[in-house]
Image 1 (tube, rainbow, N blue to C red):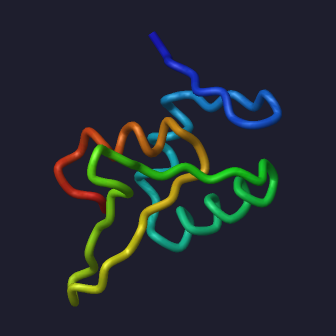
Image 2 (cartoon, rainbow, N blue to C red):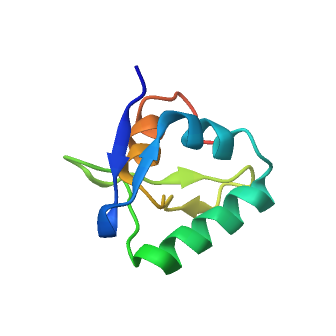
Length: 83
């Protein structure tokens, strides 16, 4: 069964499209992010009881991750490490 996530404007993203984006290199994922955010004017992040969820780079720099659809954020929330 394929799940779909509805974004702004009624666009529906499926699990196969998410997988196709996530398996690409960082530059392609970035291009996809910018295009989707520009198209739908919406970003998603993660928040818990302690506030916004942050990540750290290999050098220890704190960063806030954003995704173009809630389904990307939900999938990242279930992974042990954001990539």
